[in-house]
Length: 377
Image (cartoon, rainbow, N blue to C red; front, top):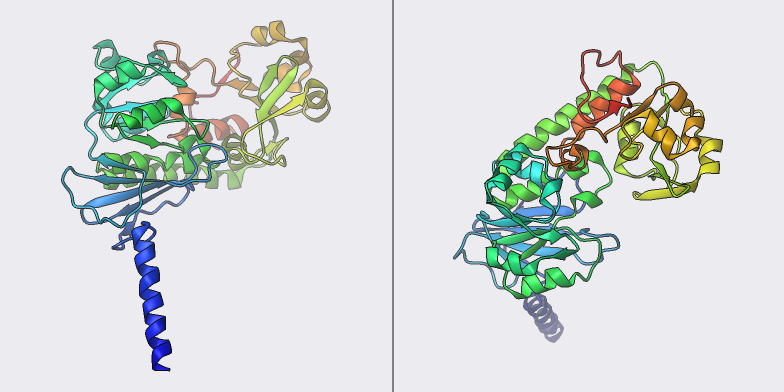
């Protein structure tokens, strides 16, 4: 019996040593920052460092990307497995998606951005001022970043946006000792899930408390607006999207766009379709299922009924066309033509929801002036 107990202890010690060697066990337990809606991001705070985990940065991702965030010189336990180590707070960074910009504005961190692909897409007044003063470098296309210019900037990190697992540009940047941190806010399905990635940026700038306070305010505003729709007297039918080469593209039923419509107490005609991406259907199906929809929102970038009619006669067969119940975000642009909806809406879902509630149930928000969605001219 004594020999058996000794053997059991030795096996137990051996297993623990093996786990530690491969970094599958953490030396100390930290405080987990609350993530109430976001599914793809986790942050654990320790005394001298933070662990940032991104589990769904691109479709079909199977690997969780782990980053150590610490001030320069901080001692990190040697039994933690991670992909990249990043010195925080970031002083110089490269952003790759317009959705990153409003969150940096909220945290007062926009002055750290030194490079971005396609500067004209940015609408933020704060960032436009930096761009106009030549403080932000143009990096070309996101899929083919100008690595020569990027490396010359020597940023503390690149916050990357990618659609695929193997990104040769990011691999090259990482090999040049510049950390690439994947951001997966766009892969979240719920509106508040996307917005909660503000805490991701809060961790990069050691502003976790501020990020939490701002997000709580946004979530409170969103949920109060959602609760307001309990008093709605009807649930109008809604269609979204537009034609592209005789194929109508619209959001799937699990997408954040569909969630907005549901939370605004409206009946999205394609709500029962599975998935969070885009759905492609024939114009014949649209005319069969959605021709009589009460409202039509997000018809691509069209801003007038004349444009719709000139683009396709099929559009004129929709009841929303004749009832003048089509609303678009295509007319709200920044100084250089960037669509404000694509930049700001993911971080301010409460504004989007108010827009839609005002459209579907104007008596609930009678004095509200829509920010993104405007009626077609």
